[in-house]
Image (cartoon, rainbow, N blue to C red; front, side, top):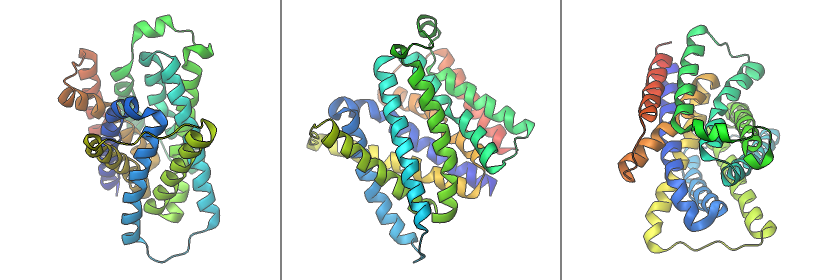
Length: 288
């Protein structure tokens, strides 16, 4: 089942990677909250359809449903924290920190679920995380930033890293009880509700209506978000969190390759090295 878990992790990586690459252009047109609302509305529709096909008629414990909603809330808080870090901080500093969340996901998986970290697994994880950090890090920005000053965005990035690490590790609990489809549906629906409350009731703003030319992009944006979320949970159903998470969180490699192919963005030498590191780490992980 390990190879199946790695395959699901790779699909999740592709889904999250392309979804993240598209997020900037969508956010510019509809705002950060608007982008989340459109993304999750499409994800929920797709999940509702697929969950119907896989629903066996079993009754689900209310405790695990509420637990999933709680995870979604923490996930939403971490998302808001990340958006704020990106808004006030330097991208080359806050993004690499937040993207290192798989470190905490692995640590929480060991702590909560007694997953065993062999030397080979540790080496593979270290190689992958090194690649993820190299993709977006900017040493000059690090030198200019103050670590413990809120205005630098770094404390918010560290908060995001820890919360994302916790959330993705805890997914394992409802996935084992509710299954990956229903768990993903509850979490993404909850995030949709939280973002609607945030936009309409707290900020008292309206949602920009999509123009016809943007509908295909919004559908693709939601589709790849759907693949990222669902296949991560499918992966941790059949394999350890400490194996699936580092692979799925290698999404920045897909994001930069997508930006190179679609937006014709130039890649730096360290980014090519980072992609090679990630690929090597994943191959090494699959050979364990």
